[in-house]
Image (cartoon, rainbow over all chains, first blue to last red; front, side, top):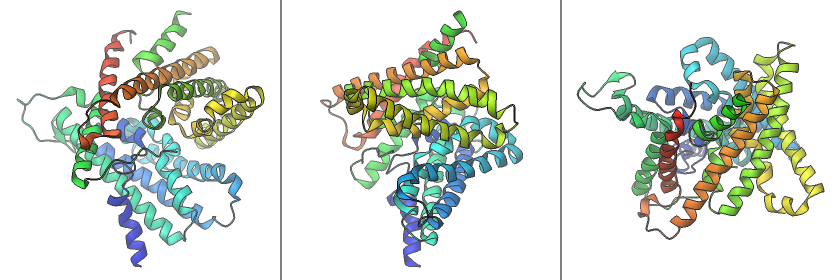
Length: 204
Length: 194
Protein backbone atom coordinates (compact mmCIF):
# COMPACT_ATOMS: atom_id res chain seq x y z
CA UNK A 1 0.00 0.00 0.00
CA UNK A 2 2.80 2.35 0.99
CA UNK A 3 4.49 1.57 -2.33
CA UNK A 4 1.34 2.55 -4.25
CA UNK A 5 1.10 5.90 -2.44
CA UNK A 6 4.77 6.53 -3.16
CA UNK A 7 4.33 5.69 -6.85
CA UNK A 8 1.35 8.05 -7.02
CA UNK A 9 3.06 11.05 -5.44
CA UNK A 10 6.24 10.52 -7.43
CA UNK A 11 4.65 11.95 -10.57
CA UNK A 12 3.01 14.84 -8.79
CA UNK A 13 6.23 16.46 -7.69
CA UNK A 14 9.53 14.52 -7.55
CA UNK A 15 9.42 13.32 -11.11
CA UNK A 16 6.86 15.74 -12.47
CA UNK A 17 6.84 15.15 -16.23
CA UNK A 18 6.58 18.83 -17.12
CA UNK A 19 8.80 20.62 -14.65
CA UNK A 20 11.28 17.92 -13.63
CA UNK A 21 11.61 15.55 -16.54
CA UNK A 22 10.68 18.18 -19.15
CA UNK A 23 8.90 15.79 -21.50
CA UNK A 24 5.68 16.14 -23.44
CA UNK A 25 6.44 19.72 -24.37
CA UNK A 26 4.33 19.92 -27.52
CA UNK A 27 0.87 19.94 -25.89
CA UNK A 28 2.26 21.83 -22.90
CA UNK A 29 3.20 24.76 -25.07
CA UNK A 30 0.50 24.49 -27.70
CA UNK A 31 -2.83 24.33 -25.88
CA UNK A 32 -2.13 26.44 -22.80
CA UNK A 33 -3.73 29.68 -23.92
CA UNK A 34 -6.30 29.25 -21.13
CA UNK A 35 -6.39 27.37 -17.82
CA UNK A 36 -9.45 25.37 -18.86
CA UNK A 37 -7.64 24.00 -21.94
CA UNK A 38 -4.90 22.81 -19.61
CA UNK A 39 -7.37 20.82 -17.51
CA UNK A 40 -9.03 19.27 -20.55
CA UNK A 41 -5.75 18.33 -22.20
CA UNK A 42 -4.37 17.05 -18.90
CA UNK A 43 -7.37 14.84 -18.19
CA UNK A 44 -7.41 13.47 -21.74
CA UNK A 45 -3.74 12.57 -21.43
CA UNK A 46 -4.31 11.08 -17.96
CA UNK A 47 -7.04 8.82 -19.33
CA UNK A 48 -4.80 7.51 -22.09
CA UNK A 49 -1.89 7.15 -19.68
CA UNK A 50 -3.87 5.17 -17.08
CA UNK A 51 -5.50 2.75 -19.49
CA UNK A 52 -2.45 2.17 -21.67
CA UNK A 53 -0.27 1.65 -18.57
CA UNK A 54 -2.80 -0.85 -17.22
CA UNK A 55 -2.97 -2.80 -20.47
CA UNK A 56 0.78 -2.76 -21.05
CA UNK A 57 1.37 -3.89 -17.50
CA UNK A 58 -1.14 -6.74 -17.93
CA UNK A 59 0.50 -7.76 -21.20
CA UNK A 60 4.05 -7.35 -19.98
CA UNK A 61 4.76 -11.09 -20.00
CA UNK A 62 3.27 -11.63 -23.44
CA UNK A 63 4.86 -8.87 -25.50
CA UNK A 64 8.18 -9.98 -27.02
CA UNK A 65 10.94 -7.52 -26.19
CA UNK A 66 11.91 -6.99 -29.82
CA UNK A 67 8.55 -5.71 -31.00
CA UNK A 68 7.52 -3.97 -27.81
CA UNK A 69 7.60 -0.42 -29.17
CA UNK A 70 5.12 -1.08 -32.03
CA UNK A 71 2.91 -2.97 -29.54
CA UNK A 72 2.93 -0.03 -27.13
CA UNK A 73 2.16 2.34 -29.98
CA UNK A 74 -0.90 0.34 -31.01
CA UNK A 75 -2.23 0.17 -27.44
CA UNK A 76 -1.70 3.89 -26.97
CA UNK A 77 -3.18 4.79 -30.37
CA UNK A 78 -6.30 2.77 -29.57
CA UNK A 79 -6.99 4.68 -26.36
CA UNK A 80 -6.22 7.97 -28.06
CA UNK A 81 -8.84 7.13 -30.68
CA UNK A 82 -11.32 6.51 -27.83
CA UNK A 83 -10.54 9.91 -26.29
CA UNK A 84 -10.66 11.57 -29.70
CA UNK A 85 -14.13 10.24 -30.48
CA UNK A 86 -15.37 10.88 -26.92
CA UNK A 87 -14.24 14.52 -26.93
CA UNK A 88 -15.61 15.10 -30.43
CA UNK A 89 -18.97 13.69 -29.32
CA UNK A 90 -19.43 15.17 -25.85
CA UNK A 91 -17.25 18.30 -25.77
CA UNK A 92 -17.27 19.65 -29.32
CA UNK A 93 -16.30 23.19 -28.24
CA UNK A 94 -13.22 22.01 -26.36
CA UNK A 95 -12.44 19.55 -29.13
CA UNK A 96 -12.30 22.41 -31.60
CA UNK A 97 -9.80 24.33 -29.45
CA UNK A 98 -7.52 21.35 -28.75
CA UNK A 99 -8.01 20.06 -32.29
CA UNK A 100 -4.86 18.53 -33.68
CA UNK A 101 -3.30 18.02 -30.26
CA UNK A 102 -5.76 15.33 -29.13
CA UNK A 103 -4.62 12.80 -31.78
CA UNK A 104 -1.07 13.90 -31.05
CA UNK A 105 -1.34 12.41 -27.55
CA UNK A 106 -0.11 9.23 -29.29
CA UNK A 107 3.36 10.69 -29.66
CA UNK A 108 3.37 12.38 -26.25
CA UNK A 109 6.65 11.20 -24.79
CA UNK A 110 5.20 10.94 -21.27
CA UNK A 111 3.07 7.93 -22.21
CA UNK A 112 5.80 6.12 -24.11
CA UNK A 113 8.34 6.90 -21.38
CA UNK A 114 6.12 5.51 -18.61
CA UNK A 115 5.24 2.44 -20.68
CA UNK A 116 8.87 1.70 -21.39
CA UNK A 117 10.38 2.64 -18.05
CA UNK A 118 7.67 1.68 -15.59
CA UNK A 119 4.46 -0.02 -16.71
CA UNK A 120 6.22 -2.81 -18.60
CA UNK A 121 8.07 -3.85 -15.46
CA UNK A 122 5.60 -3.71 -12.56
CA UNK A 123 2.24 -5.08 -11.42
CA UNK A 124 -0.96 -3.51 -12.81
CA UNK A 125 -1.80 -1.79 -9.50
CA UNK A 126 1.55 -0.01 -9.34
CA UNK A 127 1.31 0.87 -13.02
CA UNK A 128 -2.08 2.52 -12.44
CA UNK A 129 -0.86 4.41 -9.37
CA UNK A 130 2.13 5.70 -11.29
CA UNK A 131 0.07 6.62 -14.35
CA UNK A 132 -2.48 8.51 -12.22
CA UNK A 133 0.29 10.42 -10.48
CA UNK A 134 2.07 11.26 -13.73
CA UNK A 135 -1.17 12.24 -15.44
CA UNK A 136 -2.31 14.50 -12.61
CA UNK A 137 1.20 15.92 -12.30
CA UNK A 138 1.04 16.79 -15.99
CA UNK A 139 -2.48 18.21 -15.51
CA UNK A 140 -1.59 20.59 -12.70
CA UNK A 141 1.55 21.72 -14.48
CA UNK A 142 -0.16 22.63 -17.75
CA UNK A 143 -3.13 24.13 -15.91
CA UNK A 144 -0.68 26.39 -14.08
CA UNK A 145 0.95 27.45 -17.35
CA UNK A 146 -2.49 27.99 -18.86
CA UNK A 147 -3.59 30.06 -15.85
CA UNK A 148 -0.52 32.32 -16.06
CA UNK A 149 -0.95 32.86 -19.79
CA UNK A 150 -4.71 33.43 -19.51
CA UNK A 151 -4.30 35.87 -16.63
CA UNK A 152 -1.70 37.96 -18.42
CA UNK A 153 -3.02 37.57 -21.93
CA UNK A 154 -6.75 38.03 -21.48
CA UNK A 155 -7.06 39.16 -17.86
CA UNK A 156 -9.31 36.26 -16.88
CA UNK A 157 -8.93 33.04 -14.91
CA UNK A 158 -10.99 30.01 -15.92
CA UNK A 159 -13.06 32.50 -17.91
CA UNK A 160 -13.85 34.80 -14.96
CA UNK A 161 -12.59 38.37 -15.28
CA UNK A 162 -9.89 39.15 -12.71
CA UNK A 163 -8.35 42.40 -13.86
CA UNK A 164 -10.48 45.46 -14.55
CA UNK A 165 -11.03 46.94 -17.96
CA UNK A 166 -8.18 49.44 -17.52
CA UNK A 167 -5.40 46.89 -17.22
CA UNK A 168 -3.52 46.40 -20.47
CA UNK A 169 -3.65 42.84 -21.80
CA UNK A 170 -0.39 41.31 -22.92
CA UNK A 171 -1.55 39.77 -26.14
CA UNK A 172 1.91 38.29 -26.72
CA UNK A 173 1.22 35.82 -23.90
CA UNK A 174 -1.52 34.21 -25.99
CA UNK A 175 0.73 34.00 -29.07
CA UNK A 176 3.42 31.30 -29.50
CA UNK A 177 6.28 33.35 -27.96
CA UNK A 178 4.29 33.70 -24.73
CA UNK A 179 4.16 29.92 -24.37
CA UNK A 180 7.92 29.51 -24.59
CA UNK A 181 8.65 32.43 -22.29
CA UNK A 182 6.06 31.45 -19.64
CA UNK A 183 7.32 27.88 -19.60
CA UNK A 184 10.94 29.04 -19.37
CA UNK A 185 10.27 31.45 -16.50
CA UNK A 186 8.12 28.92 -14.59
CA UNK A 187 10.85 26.32 -15.01
CA UNK A 188 13.35 28.81 -13.61
CA UNK A 189 11.09 29.45 -10.61
CA UNK A 190 10.70 25.69 -10.04
CA UNK A 191 14.47 25.32 -10.11
CA UNK A 192 14.78 28.10 -7.55
CA UNK A 193 12.23 26.39 -5.31
CA UNK A 194 13.87 22.99 -5.44
CA UNK A 195 17.45 24.24 -5.75
CA UNK A 196 18.31 21.34 -7.94
CA UNK A 197 20.03 21.42 -11.28
CA UNK A 198 17.92 20.87 -14.35
CA UNK A 199 18.13 17.46 -15.89
CA UNK A 200 18.52 17.33 -19.60
CA UNK A 201 15.48 16.55 -21.68
CA UNK A 202 15.16 12.83 -21.96
CA UNK A 203 12.42 12.72 -24.43
CA UNK A 204 12.72 9.59 -26.41
CA UNK B 1 3.35 27.12 -58.98
CA UNK B 2 2.67 30.21 -56.94
CA UNK B 3 0.40 28.22 -54.68
CA UNK B 4 3.12 25.65 -54.01
CA UNK B 5 5.60 28.38 -53.16
CA UNK B 6 3.07 29.85 -50.78
CA UNK B 7 2.62 26.48 -49.07
CA UNK B 8 6.38 26.07 -48.68
CA UNK B 9 6.96 29.64 -47.48
CA UNK B 10 3.99 29.30 -45.17
CA UNK B 11 5.27 26.16 -43.50
CA UNK B 12 8.86 27.37 -43.31
CA UNK B 13 8.40 30.92 -42.10
CA UNK B 14 4.85 31.88 -41.19
CA UNK B 15 3.60 28.73 -39.51
CA UNK B 16 6.95 27.25 -38.65
CA UNK B 17 6.33 23.76 -37.27
CA UNK B 18 8.52 24.23 -34.23
CA UNK B 19 8.16 27.89 -33.41
CA UNK B 20 4.51 28.51 -34.07
CA UNK B 21 2.70 25.17 -34.36
CA UNK B 22 4.62 23.60 -31.45
CA UNK B 23 5.31 20.35 -33.25
CA UNK B 24 8.62 18.58 -32.76
CA UNK B 25 9.57 20.35 -29.53
CA UNK B 26 11.39 17.31 -28.12
CA UNK B 27 14.27 17.16 -30.62
CA UNK B 28 14.23 20.97 -30.74
CA UNK B 29 14.99 21.15 -27.02
CA UNK B 30 16.87 17.86 -26.75
CA UNK B 31 19.29 17.63 -29.67
CA UNK B 32 20.02 21.28 -30.36
CA UNK B 33 23.25 21.48 -28.41
CA UNK B 34 25.59 21.11 -31.37
CA UNK B 35 25.10 22.71 -34.76
CA UNK B 36 26.26 19.67 -36.71
CA UNK B 37 24.01 17.12 -35.04
CA UNK B 38 21.11 19.58 -35.16
CA UNK B 39 21.47 19.95 -38.92
CA UNK B 40 21.83 16.17 -39.46
CA UNK B 41 18.72 15.64 -37.39
CA UNK B 42 16.97 18.32 -39.42
CA UNK B 43 17.82 16.65 -42.72
CA UNK B 44 16.83 13.19 -41.52
CA UNK B 45 13.51 14.57 -40.30
CA UNK B 46 12.97 16.46 -43.55
CA UNK B 47 13.44 13.23 -45.45
CA UNK B 48 10.97 11.35 -43.27
CA UNK B 49 8.48 14.23 -43.39
CA UNK B 50 8.52 14.30 -47.18
CA UNK B 51 8.10 10.52 -47.42
CA UNK B 52 5.32 10.62 -44.85
CA UNK B 53 3.45 13.28 -46.78
CA UNK B 54 3.32 10.99 -49.83
CA UNK B 55 2.44 7.86 -47.87
CA UNK B 56 -0.29 9.41 -45.74
CA UNK B 57 -1.79 11.16 -48.77
CA UNK B 58 -2.43 7.80 -50.43
CA UNK B 59 -3.61 6.15 -47.23
CA UNK B 60 -6.00 8.93 -46.31
CA UNK B 61 -7.55 9.55 -49.72
CA UNK B 62 -7.31 6.11 -51.34
CA UNK B 63 -7.81 3.69 -48.43
CA UNK B 64 -9.29 5.29 -45.34
CA UNK B 65 -11.84 7.63 -46.92
CA UNK B 66 -13.23 5.39 -49.68
CA UNK B 67 -13.88 2.68 -47.08
CA UNK B 68 -15.18 5.11 -44.45
CA UNK B 69 -12.53 4.17 -41.91
CA UNK B 70 -11.07 7.60 -41.43
CA UNK B 71 -12.67 8.29 -38.04
CA UNK B 72 -11.68 5.05 -36.37
CA UNK B 73 -8.42 3.97 -37.93
CA UNK B 74 -6.77 7.24 -38.89
CA UNK B 75 -4.54 7.62 -35.83
CA UNK B 76 -3.57 3.95 -35.60
CA UNK B 77 -2.80 3.55 -39.30
CA UNK B 78 -0.86 6.82 -39.57
CA UNK B 79 1.38 6.05 -36.62
CA UNK B 80 2.03 2.53 -37.89
CA UNK B 81 2.88 3.79 -41.35
CA UNK B 82 5.23 6.37 -39.88
CA UNK B 83 6.94 3.79 -37.68
CA UNK B 84 7.49 1.41 -40.56
CA UNK B 85 8.56 4.23 -42.86
CA UNK B 86 11.20 5.30 -40.37
CA UNK B 87 12.36 1.70 -40.15
CA UNK B 88 12.50 1.51 -43.95
CA UNK B 89 14.46 4.74 -44.23
CA UNK B 90 16.86 3.42 -41.63
CA UNK B 91 17.42 0.21 -43.60
CA UNK B 92 17.85 2.01 -46.92
CA UNK B 93 20.37 4.45 -45.47
CA UNK B 94 22.26 1.61 -43.82
CA UNK B 95 22.56 -0.21 -47.17
CA UNK B 96 23.32 2.76 -49.39
CA UNK B 97 25.42 5.04 -47.22
CA UNK B 98 26.87 3.62 -44.02
CA UNK B 99 28.67 6.91 -43.35
CA UNK B 100 25.41 8.84 -43.27
CA UNK B 101 23.86 6.09 -41.18
CA UNK B 102 26.62 6.47 -38.65
CA UNK B 103 26.18 10.23 -38.54
CA UNK B 104 22.42 9.99 -37.98
CA UNK B 105 22.49 6.65 -36.19
CA UNK B 106 20.71 7.16 -32.92
CA UNK B 107 18.44 9.95 -34.14
CA UNK B 108 16.76 7.99 -36.89
CA UNK B 109 14.48 5.72 -34.82
CA UNK B 110 13.55 8.68 -32.63
CA UNK B 111 11.85 10.39 -35.54
CA UNK B 112 8.86 8.05 -35.09
CA UNK B 113 7.89 9.79 -31.88
CA UNK B 114 8.49 13.26 -33.28
CA UNK B 115 5.05 14.84 -33.21
CA UNK B 116 5.93 16.90 -36.29
CA UNK B 117 5.59 13.75 -38.41
CA UNK B 118 2.18 12.65 -37.13
CA UNK B 119 1.11 16.30 -37.02
CA UNK B 120 2.01 16.68 -40.69
CA UNK B 121 0.00 13.58 -41.62
CA UNK B 122 -3.06 14.82 -39.74
CA UNK B 123 -2.74 18.33 -41.17
CA UNK B 124 -2.63 16.96 -44.72
CA UNK B 125 -5.86 15.08 -44.01
CA UNK B 126 -7.49 18.18 -42.48
CA UNK B 127 -6.35 20.60 -45.20
CA UNK B 128 -7.21 18.10 -47.95
CA UNK B 129 -4.10 18.86 -49.99
CA UNK B 130 -3.54 17.07 -53.32
CA UNK B 131 -0.43 14.99 -53.89
CA UNK B 132 1.86 17.79 -55.10
CA UNK B 133 0.66 20.15 -52.39
CA UNK B 134 1.23 17.45 -49.76
CA UNK B 135 4.81 16.95 -50.91
CA UNK B 136 5.41 20.71 -50.87
CA UNK B 137 3.92 20.91 -47.38
CA UNK B 138 6.10 18.05 -46.12
CA UNK B 139 9.21 19.55 -47.65
CA UNK B 140 8.40 22.99 -46.24
CA UNK B 141 7.75 21.54 -42.80
CA UNK B 142 11.11 19.78 -42.93
CA UNK B 143 12.99 22.88 -44.06
CA UNK B 144 11.28 24.91 -41.35
CA UNK B 145 12.21 22.32 -38.74
CA UNK B 146 15.82 22.26 -39.92
CA UNK B 147 15.95 26.05 -39.92
CA UNK B 148 14.67 26.28 -36.36
CA UNK B 149 17.04 23.53 -35.19
CA UNK B 150 20.02 25.20 -36.84
CA UNK B 151 19.17 28.64 -35.43
CA UNK B 152 18.70 27.25 -31.94
CA UNK B 153 21.88 25.16 -32.05
CA UNK B 154 23.87 28.17 -33.25
CA UNK B 155 22.56 30.28 -30.38
CA UNK B 156 23.13 27.51 -27.85
CA UNK B 157 26.73 27.07 -28.94
CA UNK B 158 27.30 30.76 -28.26
CA UNK B 159 25.39 30.60 -25.00
CA UNK B 160 27.86 28.08 -23.60
CA UNK B 161 30.11 31.02 -22.84
CA UNK B 162 27.39 33.26 -21.48
CA UNK B 163 26.80 33.91 -17.78
CA UNK B 164 23.29 32.50 -17.37
CA UNK B 165 21.58 32.87 -13.95
CA UNK B 166 21.82 29.60 -12.08
CA UNK B 167 18.12 28.83 -11.92
CA UNK B 168 17.67 29.37 -15.64
CA UNK B 169 20.51 27.12 -16.73
CA UNK B 170 19.63 24.20 -18.94
CA UNK B 171 16.24 23.97 -20.57
CA UNK B 172 14.76 27.11 -19.01
CA UNK B 173 17.04 29.52 -20.87
CA UNK B 174 16.58 27.50 -24.06
CA UNK B 175 12.81 27.96 -23.77
CA UNK B 176 13.14 31.69 -23.24
CA UNK B 177 15.50 31.92 -26.23
CA UNK B 178 12.97 29.94 -28.26
CA UNK B 179 10.37 32.51 -27.19
CA UNK B 180 12.48 35.32 -28.60
CA UNK B 181 13.09 33.33 -31.82
CA UNK B 182 9.39 32.70 -32.11
CA UNK B 183 8.74 36.42 -31.62
CA UNK B 184 11.12 37.13 -34.49
CA UNK B 185 9.23 34.64 -36.65
CA UNK B 186 5.96 36.45 -35.85
CA UNK B 187 7.36 39.16 -38.10
CA UNK B 188 6.82 36.89 -41.09
CA UNK B 189 3.11 36.60 -40.43
CA UNK B 190 2.23 39.28 -42.97
CA UNK B 191 4.11 37.43 -45.69
CA UNK B 192 1.17 35.34 -46.83
CA UNK B 193 -2.24 36.81 -47.55
CA UNK B 194 -4.82 34.91 -45.52
